[in-house]
Image 1 (cartoon, rainbow, N blue to C red):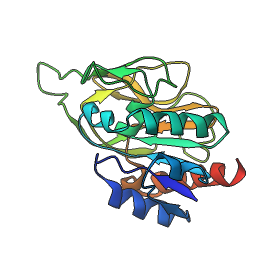
Image 2: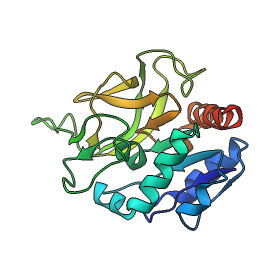
Image 3: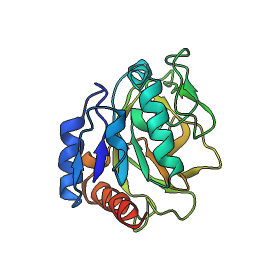
Length: 203
């Protein structure tokens, strides 16, 4: 059973539909203790990084404990940003810190050819093979909506270009993050969710 963490940061309904389409069994845990029997964890989210402050120490430690026990974790959009140490959007709010680095604001172009927020379909550049992107082709189109983005690091498995290059997907052992919304990204997004569900079954 996959735990879909509701911390008030939105888009839960669409993620539920995506997980259901991917064949997942899931529940919304009422508190950190409800993660104990979970075979996977999804942290979704949209909006300001400050919303992650709702994932206070109880949630943070419970999620970290399950990850340490080998349970797969997927962060989506704001949930991916939360995997990093902190964000320039809310400097006083700590991320989970599994991924090293700081989330930075994307820069608009002075001639308005690059607009922020980055909203709409864009292509993925695959950096290296990964479980979360298995079966995803170079240049696959996925759907983004964000103003801040993660740096390219050793954990980056796919990048995207919007004014500058940023991490579109990251993977470290059984921890995965996607800056885009797989639940709104058609066949490619559904394949990514199915890949995560498979990781949870095989953990």
